[in-house]
Length: 110
Length: 145
Image 1 (cartoon, rainbow over the protein chains, first blue to last red):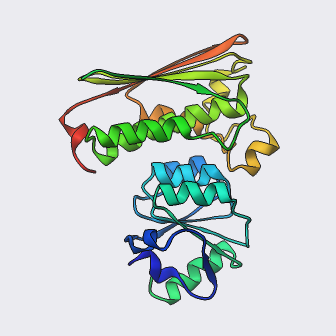
Image 2: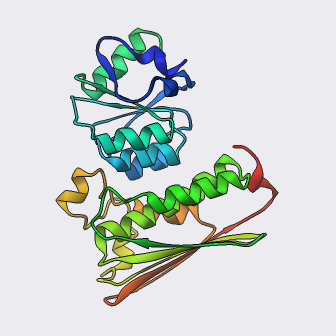
């Protein structure tokens, strides 16, 4: 699957289009960054409500190609710039975490 | 091979947190290490860096690489870990509400560090905490995981 396959009218891409051509394998949902560090698989898309520069740092450390911020979390310009530098795609959505998973499953992305 | 870098870590600055561990990761990647080795070192570096940001009055980190060992050392200026045994218990955390809103305070930091490193030493008193980590470099460290 490609990161750009995630895009629909329900997801807003916040970063440059170039990072969306990366492959992803599955997702990991979590809001505690230590647990994400412990458990997320390489190349997974992170689904979380924690929107701060550390979320981007964790994605960078774990080689995660994209982050989906749920429930319309505010994503700052600092985060967007950091993500663009690291080629990590950031999405925001009004969906709750479980709704993103159901939606991606329904679209055969998982 | 001999590589050394020093990093200052600013307390309570969540925007800068992760700068040191990101730098360590980039260096290891550039030197051709495999994903599994990079992940172990950078996860430990990140957790230790975040601990200093969340809990300490400020501190610094040293990153040193030789042919057979990767060393990370973290030193802060206090207030120290009151009970290391409790701090090593999964789920135990003294992190503030601000830290929790930033996604920290799961009580897993030191456990993640211990699991990642090949050797760990942790000394703490009210004047400060010294955490030393060793990761042994073998042929496997260069294999893509």
